[in-house]
Length: 202
Image (cartoon, rainbow, N blue to C red; front, side, top):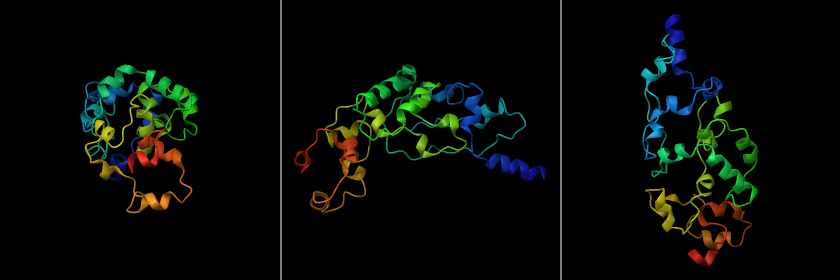
C-alpha cells in the first residue's frame, strides 16, 4: 500500500495554489527565471529543490521538458526585474481600450496580483494543475511591444515563418470567403493591429 501511495503522490498534478498560499516567491522554485534570456530555457524546478521542503519523498516526479512554445525569443531576466509594473501597464491598456483582445475580466484578475510573475502567468494562485491557460497571451506582450508590421514583426518573438503562424482559418481562398462573412475583427488585431486594412497585406 505504501508503494501505491508513493506512486500516486508522484503522479499528482502540481498545485501552484498550495505553494503560493505559503507566501513563496516564484523565483525560489523557478530560480532560473532571474537569468533566463530565452523562452526555450527549462525553468521547471529539479527534484532536488523540491526535496529541500518535501523530505518525505512525496514530491518526487519524473523530470520533464517545458511545453512546446511558438515563442522562442523572450527575456525572463528583464521582465522579472520589472516586477508588478507589468500588471499595472496591462491594466492601463485595458482602461485605455488599447488591449488587442477582448479583455473579459482581465482587469479584476490583475487587481489582485500579489506575485509579479502572476501578472503574465495569471490564475496560478487558484490553480491545482498547470495548463496552457496560465501562460501569457500575445495581447499581453503587445501592450509594450506594439510596433506591428505583419509579417515582418513576427520574427521579433517567433522563429517560425509567418505562414507557419497563420491561424487554421487562413486557408486558400480565405480572403474571398471572409470578406463576405461576419468576421469578428477584434481577433484580427493581435496579428494585424487595430489600424490594418485588408489591402495592406493583399
